[in-house]
Image (cartoon, rainbow, N blue to C red; front, side, top):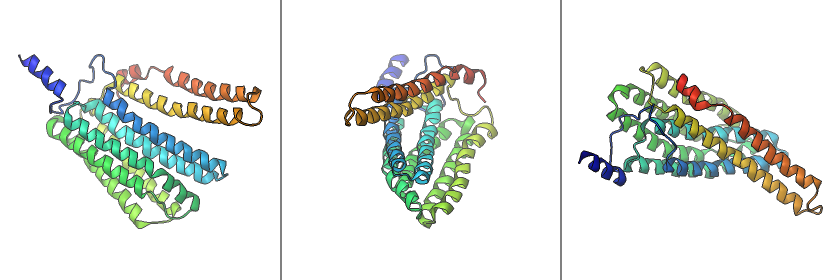
Length: 291
């Protein structure tokens, strides 16, 4: 009877304690919710790539490179924050699902702010990342609530959860203050570097300094999640190849040797990067040494 009750609760996605997943769980794979979550990042990467290509085509190399690096870090870091948490604590109950949806909304808002950020870098005015910061505020409300819930249920790792909550909250307050200050781009980027160090230090302190091996993330699950993110980013290579090929074949020359070379080069480079990445058994390496 207990098993039947648990099965009914699982189907109904009833609230369950976040006591931590088994890091040696067999058959652990990305969930449908995680795959849906990744679609918002496909949009964000596509928007950043469009802006990057636009400013490169205009000859504004500085704006293109600085804007894209800033955008890529913001997008990837948002993904990293949630994916490592989910690997350790995903319960797939209704609370976890709704807070994941909140973070998806934040990613969409972040993507909507990328164009404004690129434009401010190109003008060398104050860094206009207010919409991006707003997206992060939305995401981090959900993230802090998830860590708070994990800390409440997983008493052995409560110090780790508190560390994540404090570092996430501190860095987010810093980003909001940086936007409100409306400083020149160069000054903003210098201060942003300090905030990035706080962002990066948070997980290191939590996982290595707060004891007992860190959170119970699953090595093969994490390896799969990063592999899926790589495929999403490589998809931009396929889209770029199709766009370039479309411009060539619908031009005066039509189908030609150049068109064939564009197709072979674009798909070949993308395929080569895929081959190199997935040639390494990351899941086995992480399982052998969680450091």
